Length: 293
Image 1: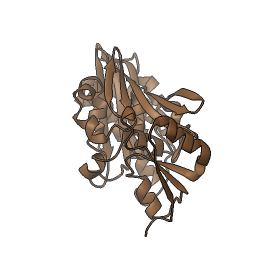
Image 2: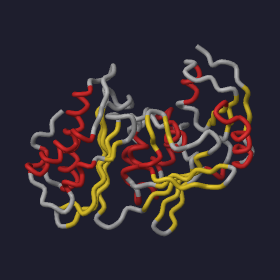
Image 3: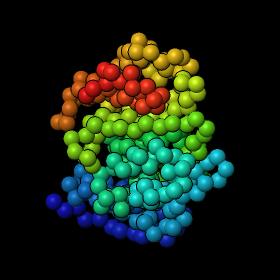
């Protein structure tokens, strides 16, 4: 199939893009990398009247470290994140996760802003943003707003971004002392959408978690920041403690059945990921004795 007829405008600046969005609202769609938008249009899942191309706005591209903050422009491509020494040094969770995003052809064109605005619940980057306690910066004609990543994602393909706003950048805290990360996903083939995945960021001191953010993806309608993690903070992690957290995790999740997997399979895989993640973050192989898929 081919997309329905549409008008096209190439934005010359962020303000120009915002003016176009203000005039056309939800009848327009923003084109950045196009790796999700164009297939959806070709399948006629969406039929916007106007495409606003922001791909040439250099001001929305780039990675910068300032003090304790990493700022990433919305048009920064996946491949740039993957190759960035700043990301590898200060947000290694992101480097590891990007390698799981689709295939090189997609990573060469796809952008971080496009991925976050698309808000696919099986996508790696939204989960990473929540795990890293990121702030997402959006701009409308009335000015900028700063939204915590865990508040940005509202549901399947749904975010806090209004039809008149543009995602400008994201800000991540630089990984601190004793920071550790974990990333793993189960997929039928490398590059396929995840059946279940976990992005985790932790602070480990004296073989215990003093901070832990476990964010599961592909097991709900958005990234799930697991409340079960609170059972693992500032305690000695033993198999019984981990079992209690695993039971609590079951209450956190509300996976759905689909052609990829059943809800019960996704719930089981999430518990496997919890055991693997805790084991890897603490360097405790004994904790993963039952963590088999």
